[in-house]
Length: 353
Image 1 (cartoon, one colour):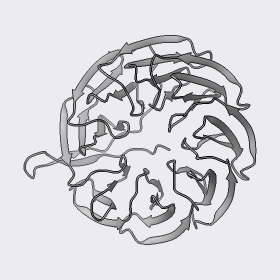
Image 2 (spheres, helix red, strand yellow):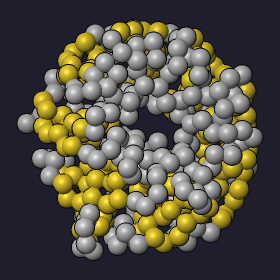
Image 3 (cartoon, helix red, strand yellow):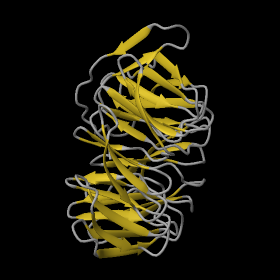
Image 4 (cartoon, one colour):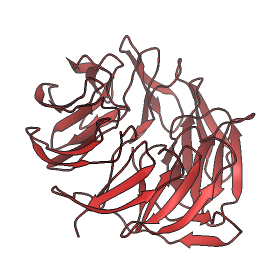
């Protein structure tokens, strides 16, 4: 789930000067290797989630938590905003709004006006999954499994539903359906307009990876490394492939190939229609960073401190780059650039000069 990212406003680190970061254009992705390092930026904390792209900007949240706004062309810091509570999950941009789940004595989902950084409203609860946006509605799931649709402009509760277990994946929207996976092993489809449950399929163990839409199927993976595809409209399982290791929280899909990173140090390329393993690629470290893919290339990072570019169809190594440390956060793909941040607090941006 990624939506068109609109501009953002940040308060500078000291003082009340407001920096307005303008409206972005629509991004087209598809940069192919070999890449060149364009710039790096040192941050005050480890990355919390992957980088977000908004026109000529890159936004990166850290565990401090601090939100950085950087010029995507040269890495110049344009804004920096710190929060008074620990963030629970990466934020979400929704038009003129920015939503962020924070912890503390009274955990809540906070929604800010991106133009002034003023808090517009907050909704109590522990929200450690990134919310999704559908029209004028924000849909969020709390750590107890309550899914709540909130009106974007004032936080008014529109509907409430229960997953029946603790969430273990971010929500995925597809048309009138919202999909989520639970710690108790259910893949659940809800009507995104009413919250009414459409179907529920038991996968018999904790769901690990955010569901991905593949044509008429929805694909996810479980904690033991079982990758499964189910029909979008019924939940009937179509195929299953056992990889045997903890998969990444995010899966990449392009060109009919599903790319999965696993804790056994491998990336796998699966046929999205059948689940058959097309290729494997071994790294020298645990893979916890979610991969991304273009029509021709899969990009993934490992705790071995490398960023890899693999041929999407057969998995052979096209290019790699040695980073300054291990990568746990997702790799991000923008318009002709790839971004990745290490646990040593350094954000790298690659592209073509």
